[in-house]
Amino acid sequence: MPEKILLNSSDIERALVRIAHEIVEHNKGAKSIAFVGIKTRGVPLAQRLARIIHNMEQVDIPVGSLDITLYRDDVTSLGFKHVVQQTYLPFDITNKQVILVDDVFYTGRSIRAALDALMDLGRPQTIQLAVLIDRGHRELPIRADFVGKNIPTAHNEEIKVFLNEVDAVDKVAVRRLDGENSEPK
Amino acid sequence: MERIVSPNEPKLSTAGQESLPPLSIGLWRHRNVLDLDDFLSDEIALVFEIADGMVEVLARDVKKVPTLRGRTIAIMFYEPSTRTRASFELAAKYLGADTVSLDSAKSSVAKGESLIDSLRTLQALEVNTIIIRHPCSGAPYIAAQHLQTSVINAGDGCHAHPSQGLLDLYTIKRKFGDLKGRKVVIIGDIMHSRVARSNIWGTRSTGLHVVLCAPKTFIPQGMPEMLEKCGLDHVSIEHNLDHALEGADVVMPLRLQKERQQSGFISSIREYVRLYQVNGERLKKAGPDVIVMHPGPMNEGVEISHDVAYCNSSLIEQQVTNGVAIRMALLYLVSGVRN
Image (cartoon, rainbow over all chains, first blue to last red; front, top):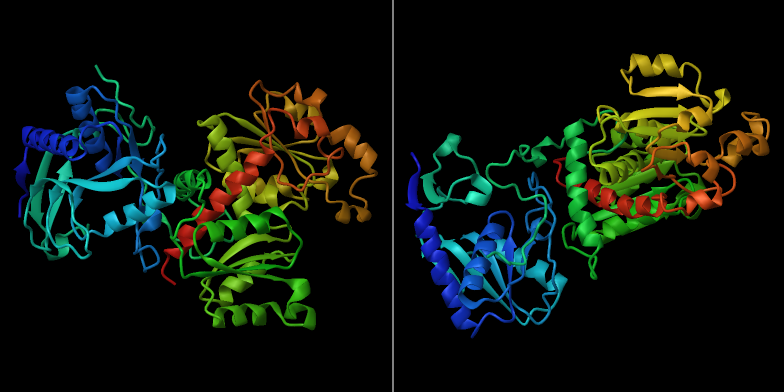
């Protein structure tokens, strides 16, 4: 199946602006907020949200990046395939309102790993979750606080977020994985 | 106006910029890490990329991640060691694994148990990885043949010390970035040095030029022919230290293994010091950014003078820290390989 575009560049931008407003409203300002993007595509999303809130509130918001590979629950299972990358948090998350940012919310397992990773790095006052796409199929009792778009999907579909900073294009696409040609996520 | 505090890390590739294809974990084929002679340069790059992530973990207040929780790593040392052993043990513990440490004097080896029986016992105890140091060259290979468990060589006789070779190269790489045309001088008892051997294999196809500098008795017979035969044309041999040090970027004196000097390889330690000690005066001949490394333990005042060991160019302590990161990366990688 050819891929189908669900969101284009301006759709993504509008969703992020709305999320940014919700974050500021929910936290009654942006003073003690910090963004932590989950690698890879959560990081540019976190940077964009910080930029939008900066333009709204004239507040500089710290942005960090989190690699969750060391916290995954499938590392010791056979044939894992993740390269460990660097976590970069240039600020102390203790007593901050930490907003975790990821591109797609699916089973909730990577968020579970991210929560464990954050807890090892400090004691945030709260941790909230912002995602661009919620595609359903949660396997854990975790849900997002801020969602760009809910897109109900089937298990054999793949949602792929493309971002300028990483992929040289802004779009969200869905495609069906057919048997042998499928690339497991 | 952009005044966002944002990560300025180099890793995140941005559109329009040239970036190398991402390293894939699928490159990794090693169930065992026995020597660096069968490592591809991409595999070494993968180890280093993962080590970068581990360096970040080591810089945290809480240096522990749950990655290898539930796995058991046995550390068997048939030879004395401080740093390698502590380094492997901490690496395993920081990754959340459980460790069991055995040394020959306190185990059944003292009662006459053979190497293979000891290893089989560990395997029967469901150990996932065995780290072994042994005075006999090749012992870890025998271990690997008899076991389904992963085996990591932590030094075997005069043969190989792959994790040391990797951490040395990693230390050089972190200092210089581009290695092309850089000159590494390894000085001393090449004959008995597994560190030198693993460094020779590890530096292959990195662009580094390696000079082995030692009295003739410390260079194994037939070494030039062996280097040629193995295609190790980045290595050359020089007997005069002052010549070897000219323009050097990395200076690595090896420990003079006093326990092996009864059989007349050198006429006296005093003469060795006069001709081959790396001291402040000699180091002036090296390049402007020269770094000093040493695999440890040091005989200060023999192969290296006190002032050089603790000078600003010395990365000897950095090597120890990097060693933990490299060993964490190796343990992580072998844990993912199907037995």
